[in-house]
Length: 403
Image 1 (spheres, rainbow, N blue to C red):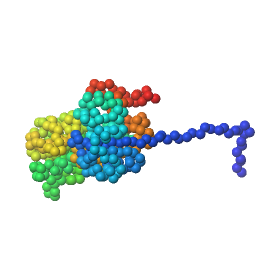
Image 2 (cartoon, one colour):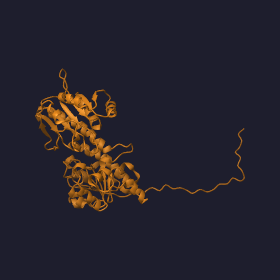
Image 3 (cartoon, rainbow, N blue to C red):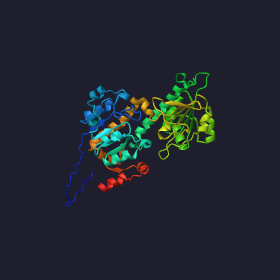
């Protein structure tokens, strides 16, 4: 028989204070998307699909006339999505939040408003102290979107652009090996009875991984060099196959370069600059008509013979070796790249609105805070401050002092 619970006569109920979940007040954003006129930029930071989501949630989105044309998104696409088309750039820069796909130019810096929020990439080699001083004076909150981290600590926009660059590098190499672009007439993958082209990749990061995937997919022979055994092992596990790999030994590298049809530079930068690992002497001994794709040219390049080219004039020859050294490779497939950027930035803007504003999200989300290099008159990125001799302020300490 189950005994009934005994309750003492001294037992009593005490009322407890009710706790309520207080949700932050949502904020209506005023977003401006300018037309890019520099850095060979064809991408747009928000696609019409992303704009439609934001407009349907009550936000005001202004798009400069022709902003999406480089990615084949036209004004009618944005107006159908609910955006306002603005023909005056100064009028567009009255938006409280500016979303750009290219770094801030000197002309645009003059149009920025006090306490404005700007999402854009930051291009260290082209950055000028005068631009930073303007941002400081206007107390702009500047966020480098390539430095934004997700919940697992990776950089989603950088990864997407790296995936594009790796795939595009192989397709570009295949193009310049062909006769139509004055190449030596080699099919990258070969055919039955004819050996495939030999592809050498320097680096074992995301760019190298997707370049290797594309090259293997076309049937090419692939060899990979990197000084990190961990990255080499990770790359082979990710692509699911074993291939020739080596640390960057100058003797072995020079020998393999002599036999390569394609050499792709995808070295990670050290302190913002890519180390040169292929000397001019090595290039001079490469086969006539072979192709170099220096993806690392954004940070200086890893081939001694590399120099920056443009999408209009992408190649030149040194020692009869074709060099393709276009920075911002992803802009060559701008529609795909624009969708990738928009897929990252649109949810961030939603979160900013739901939380009460960009400043609130910066304080509560370390991933977004990692991208902030300027905050209301303070330089919050140590490498930027060091390069230009400006005072550095730790953003975490800045918030701690405000609390």
